[in-house]
Length: 84
Image 1 (tube, rainbow, N blue to C red):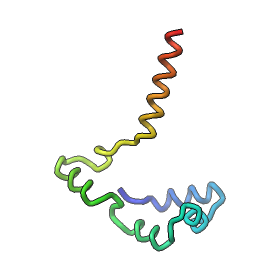
Image 2 (image 1 turned 90 degrees about the vertical axis):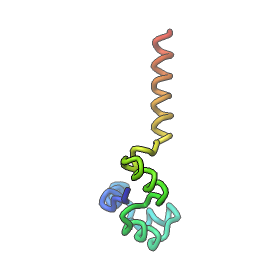
Image 3 (image 1 turned 180 degrees about the vertical axis):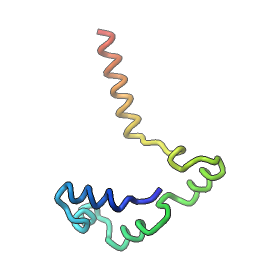
């Protein structure tokens, strides 16, 4: 997975921030940010090795825990409404 510079810059503009301001707020140096942006991947090498061995994309073996929890809350709330 790569950083999407266009999306990051557009989000900064949408929020009325410069890239430098956003990076300062995030506590990330410009050097570190652009170093990551130049990489073909920002994922750890071991993740790439496991995904490659399984013939999967790295995104296929990652989980978004926040999204899972949000989905569980929605399902839980829906279940409560049906029980009443």
